[in-house]
Image (cartoon, rainbow over all chains, first blue to last red; front, side, top):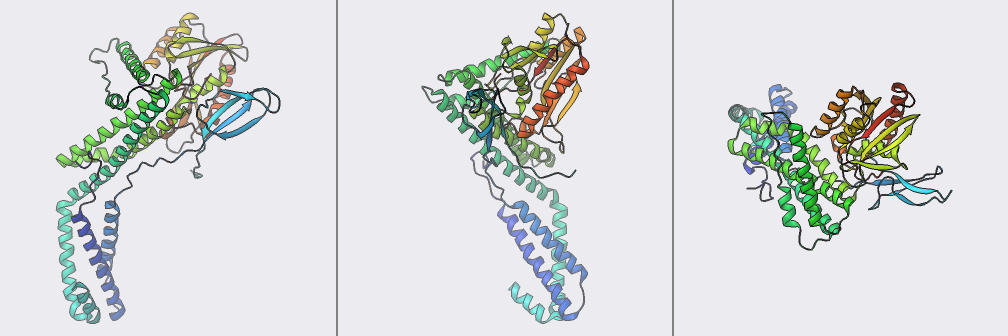
Length: 132
Length: 377
């Protein structure tokens, strides 16, 4: 079984071949219709519409058949740790380190010697501005 | 051959065009007949292809999460023997829900099953990772839970895929194909969660716990129920009992039991109960958006929610809910900046709710619900 064995079957060759033949023939029909227009100055609407739609259909089917990316889309996250002082308004940021947790005390404030603690840990996500 | 015909047709348009035209007519008629007869079969094949692609992705996620779980247990727990076989056994773990034919006492029975499951999982992790401390055991249990969820999702999707392939039933394939985008989003969230759990980073679900942690920071705390602490905080002249699960290990505690105990201790003399939790946002809503409502904002299987509803109704105590909205992919992933901002807004709303709905000297209960991984108190 393809899925159980870890290998995924590719799109059936027969289907791909049929779609490719359909694509080639529809392109040929489209070229032919254009040639007729150039040589005889008559527009074969039906041929143009049919061949153009066949080209679009075969491209769509080929895109559907295309093998998808198999790896999970797990992008590395940039996680920040915000450090604040209990006594003053001192704040600093650094990348998250293993062992960090919110409200962990991590030393003394360089400004007022107060206790420094981890105020928050978060990742920043860039999202497109929405207008609706 | 075909090219030659085409060239001839271009050079001698009138002679060959009729011939080509006939061929295309026949091809189109054949194509229509094929689509007419085999249309659904072609659509089924395309849908199966789509499911197959997603299934491979799910398999990769499942395998990777299993691998991360094994490495994390080896790295943190320093086991004496290889934990792989034990992890594989746990990944196949099943929970059997209590019988609902006679619903009397189902909550108590469900709670018992949940408690046993939690104990079993932690105990297994403790045996696999003898060098891990309590916080790490909780985090590793969360890692295992996420890997288990991914394994279950993969197996269910595979079941429908193979069933659809075997029967070629359009409707079996259609139902899984329609749900696939949601399933994939949830699976990717679990896959991201594994990393957050391994490193002990706070997750989106911990928004409520973070609110409680901010309120009780620097105050005295006591254990009130299993893995749950309470702290007495003065807010604008009112006595607030702030409840959260014990952090920074991955815990949800028993907020329902804690609220019940406080209400029973105070014999119902509580002016307001405020529960803060993360809630799933609708598409288009901003992550970290804070909304208010009434009722018990506690997710999960419903045991804690039931307990609070019961005791609040018994003493007729008003229930307020503050929800911090987030997407399904944020619930178990590392907390987003917007959610941290939402936490600050939720605290301001709690203060406003208390000022508007209670008098000085009153007692209120504030419960921050959610997984407290990466959040101390």
